[in-house]
Image (tube, rainbow, N blue to C red; front, side, top):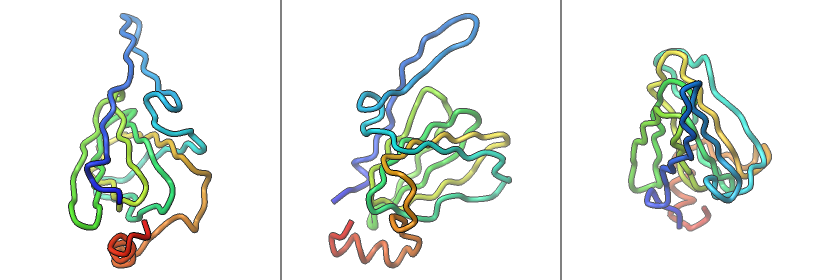
Length: 139
């Protein structure tokens, strides 16, 4: 069963240059899965939260390209906040964890890589159902 202990902050390679720095991430190297989908969050109004769901199968890798935000993860027992504010760190989030994103700074830009193509059926939006599924070993 997946727990908070399976979440990882991964430092990305940095190529430092006086003209501007460069970082990157690759499938099965820094990102521990094959990327099937990429999406991003931007223009999130102050005080708003994103997420509020869990995935049955999808894994994610989240980078704060600009600004900062918190990713709040919950495994049904334990809850932990991961603050992202550097573009050379990524957060690996395995499937089966409840996630919320909050405390977006002005002009925050969240880049997210997913291990699955979009599938509405993969989402769990009800927290009580999520906890029941975790308890029963369904996710």
